[in-house]
Length: 235
Image (cartoon, rainbow, N blue to C red; front, side, top):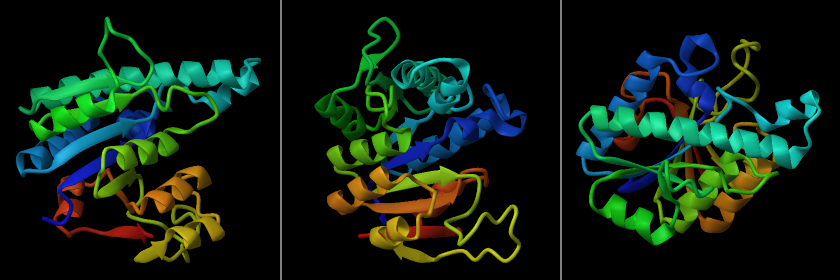
């Protein structure tokens, strides 16, 4: 098995589908089914989800909010997505547990490393919301943190393009896709697929990052089996 235990990072926008905001039912179902299939294939899976389909912390700065308040609102959006994804994965036939780094015991479990590891060992998909529970840190950094502390073999970064490019392929037809990069190269070239803090943490933990398009049907399973198009970012 290429990667036994993995963490999948999903942006909130990935769950919004063509509408661009909120939750898109068909997209949510498709991604949940992909995750469930990977779990049924024997992979231990954690998911960290963003909240940009509801609210992005940086947007709050234009609305008169300070950064800690805006980021706190964004954390609530990630928990909303975690609850939705938990339900969708269970509907697909695999047990899932939503956990939040910001304690919300009436809604879901509070995140705890050993509890998450126990869930994963018993075949449950762990869906983590709440970011790092601290302002000023992105959910990409939260994903790198959780992947490192859960001993994941890879961090799968799902985006809307099939890897890391020299420029935005949607606006630059000459953009070329990287097959493989090191963390130092990703940081030094200021590639924006993840923020610098996330790449630095992944480098420190010796964590492989796989960047792929989550929009393709069966994309997660394809990455885990070594098929499909992606970019590997390695130590």
